[in-house]
Length: 298
Image (cartoon, rainbow, N blue to C red; front, top):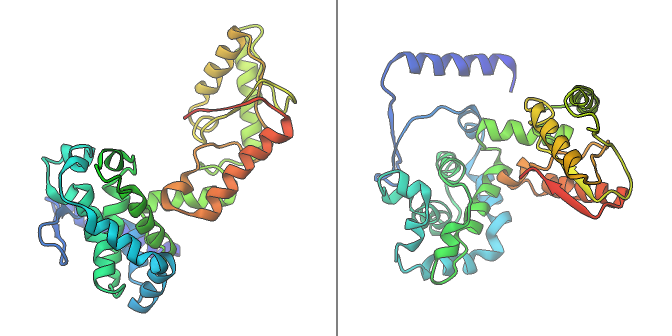
């Protein structure tokens, strides 16, 4: 998307906000689904470029051979409500039934199957809003289902469809792009990452004499992988971790290689290739340094 398109989009958002009260969105597919209109460039702009034929091809590619199995999962649900009571979205929105996990899969994948994969671009935008912004894929619904139906797996399949079609909330799309480019979620170059580690060690020595931030130490007990935000905007977290290791007398290290961010934001949009690339990089670093354990911030 060029800078002029972005400027037009942002100007439209400003105009809508200046009008006062937010407009309500009522789904043309499910009239009970009523939400505030939330402009999002990642959803609004890309969806206008899609065709029904393109959408049908992608859905068939993702779930075509699984249709019967997925349909049986949806139809097995007996609407007991246990998954709903386990869902924070349902509870925190006054038990609105459209937030219930089973409603989410019926309104998205269930509708795709019902229509034999022939759905329009606006429906894909609707699905993207449901699966990306109204579900944390926390897996609680599946844990509480008496039949063990994997509702989360279905939500992830719909995310996969939306990702391939490019209909993803802009914030998540940005994080995915930076993982593809730099293998971290904050557009941090490898040089800046290493400079930050050297800087925090220099600063930390003034507070704790034996504080060190070892890099590429082979055979260490622990290899620590931070989150991307820590060496960019939360540098004090690196200090704290180094202080804990120093006081505890733990043999640890960090890596100089470019796969160090353990957040793997690509997982949330189901970008399989980048997900695998990140995980492989983390384990290759551990193998290269011959460490005994991997420790992640989260």
